[in-house]
Length: 420
Image (cartoon, rainbow, N blue to C red; front, side, top):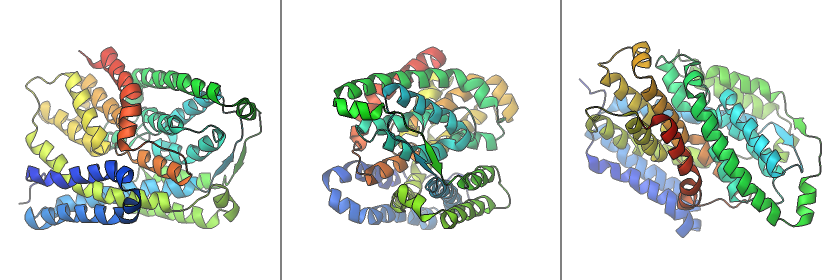
């Protein structure tokens, strides 16, 4: 009988490590070569791991499981990308630091309704346009921090890890009820940091730029029929049976949006498929090569005798930074269930409330630590790069922004809520 969780050789984590190194260093050291050959790198390293699982471990069920996860992931990401590309929000001026903070706050709240992916894809282009006179890397990075990650901590729609928890039996409003204090603190800290950084940037801008950005102009929305297709995608998220119906509805919504949207709207958004193509290819490699890392952790990394809430927060968070945060969350949630002798979810939520909250908050918040921690991160970077906007490298993101800005917020959240 095939084991539900294969036990891979630890050496098979190496392809995942090589892919992370390539994603981090190749665009910096070999940009021309990487732009041309990154699909070959992702496919080759993924093929090594898939071959090992299929022919070495005979773990066909595990490969099919990951393939289904990938199809669901790219179906959601891709459909939201296409539909949001059919909605054009015209906005010029008004990009003062205070207005930017309000915009990011609206984006954070919207992430709980549209998902971090939906909110990111819908709001990124107007965000870039309204700041075009002084756009810098911090505009892109804080957008990733706030809209693409931390903002979506209140509902299962908000972020994929929380949706997996919902599928496992956590009530829909349980997350909002228990995670809102951490959400409020984390979001407030990041918005305050952004206001300071953006104010300094604003003061350095030439006076003519500041005058343009404070000229109030009416916002204009085009492509609003695509809100129907957006609603279809959000409804499809909750459909589990029959298999692949959810993904088919998402694809149908994307096709309907693409072929019914006026060409002028796509042109206004500078819409093309290159960003989603890059994300789809790289995440084929990531989903395939991270299987040994996740499976080895689940098979060999047992819990301490009396794990603290801080252990769950920092362990789940650290791994969510470099692994996809959804399967990382699921691994720790399963560990929590096992720690209370495979109790049902209501009993787990009643007896280990703070531990479940710690895992939930960590998976969402720490997903912002790197470009690969959460699906929308890489998508935002790809769209910004396509628009010729400077974005930090993989390590530049970590050392220039994660460590000085995000890490202090994560420490404060731990100190206030999870250090016991």
